Each structure stands twice: as C-alpha cells, then as structure tokens.
Image (cartoon, rainbow, N blue to C red; front, side):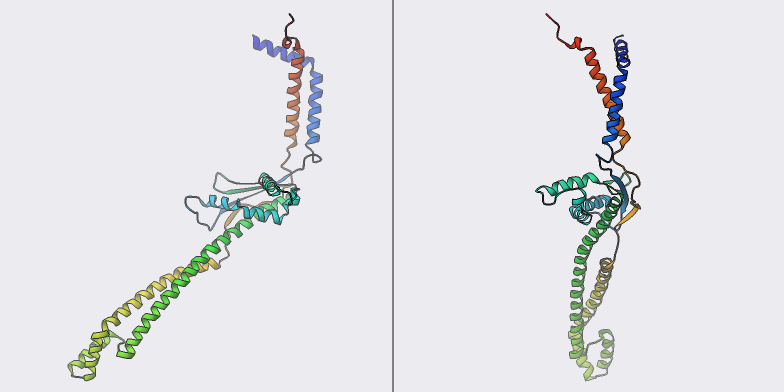
Length: 311
C-alpha cells in the first residue's frame, strides 16, 4: 500500500509540475545538442586495421600475436608515428613543456587503441579529427611494425650468418690443412692411394723389386696416417656441406625482404564521425534534467516533512 501511495504521489507531482518539468527537460536537451556540436567538441573520425602476425617466431611462452602486440606498443613505433604525423601540433602539445612527453603519451594512448581480438588478431583503432590522418596512422603503425621486426631479425640473423661464416672458414682451414698433409705424404713418400698402392707394392715386393721394398716401408710407416687423413677429409667435407646448407638458408633469410603481418581489414578514411555521439549526449542531458527536476520538486513539495518539528 505504501509503495502504491508513493507511486501515486510521484505521478501526481509530475502531472502537477508537468510544464515546468517539460521545459527544463527540453532546455537541457537543447543545451546538450548545442554543447555537443563541433563548436564545443572537436569531432573525431575512427579508422581501424586488423592484422595477423606472419613470419615471426615467439619468444619463451608467448604467442605470435602477443609478440606482435608487444612490438606494436613499443616506444620506438610510437615515437615514429608522433614525429611522422607531427602529433605535437595535432594534439596541441608544446614539445618544450616540462611534461610534454607524459601528456603526449596519454593523448596518444587515448586516441590510438591497440588490442588483441578474441580470434588472436591485432586490432588497431585510431581516432583523429582528420579521417585521412586517422587512416594513415593505422597504416603507418603496421608499416613501422614491419620495419621494426625486419630490423630485429636482420640484427639477429646477421649474427647467425657471421657465426656460420666463421665456422665455414675454420672448417675450410682444417680441410686445407689435412689435404696439405696428405699432399706432403705423396710428395715425400709417394703415398697417394693407399689401397691401390698396397696391392701394387705387394706384387712388386714378391718379385724382389727394390723400389717396391722402399715403397712398402713407406706405406707401413705413413700409410695409416694417410688413411686417417683421407677419412678425416671426407668427414670434414660432409660437415662443411651441412654447415654450408644452414648458412645459405640463414643468408637467404638475411637478404630477404619479408613482411610480418597479414592485413585482414584495411583501414580507410571514415565518412562519418565516431565521437561525440550527439543523440546519447542529448538523451542523457534530458534524462538527467528530468530526474533532477523531479527530485528538487519532490523536496520542495515535501519540505514541511523534512523541516524540524516546532516545540
């Protein structure tokens, strides 16, 4: 009964002051429409790009998308965007001010949102007063991301390439040293093909050849070393070939011109502003004025109930 009575009293209050409430509500709505216009609030236009990572390998336990998110949010990319598009002027921040960098980054992260989507893609949403600038910033973020990843890969792969080059150089030196020693054995002792020479020397030794006897002695003294050298040369050659294949693979990657993102949604200049949404501002202004006026009128109507009782 009390709730019904209170509801009835509230309805009677609204009906009694309906014209006052209506006027206040309309005035508030008009004010909301005026103050949400471009005269008072600079309209912003939104441009969005959605991309997946490509040609990258994650570090530790992070995913490729998380790695892409970390790199795009890096300070170096933010600085590149700020300088290329002169956001100091766009955001009206004096770069000589003591806390200019702090205010710039606050404004930058308010206008540019970079997040991971539920489908493991990266969403880049840019708001700017110029729709073309918003579109260009979204494109350039992906461009600078590609440049940053290429730089990182170039530096790291370059280190690997140098390592392989040094390893190949050492392997080649080792093989040349083994070949030189085998050549020396051939020049000094006539050992060039142990297996073939052994058969010939054995046949000559049986026939009583003095030259075969000398050659037999050389083969006995230096033959095992020659066999060992030949085995090592073959083994080192196989290792050299394997290392060279890895080297050529890294070298191709080092000299390649890859991109590191697959753009699913290309950004474009918006033809309609995204902020402010005037109908929301007008609706909220009218609703707030209506509720406030009802509360004030309710207090006025019931002021005797709220006043202290006379003794």
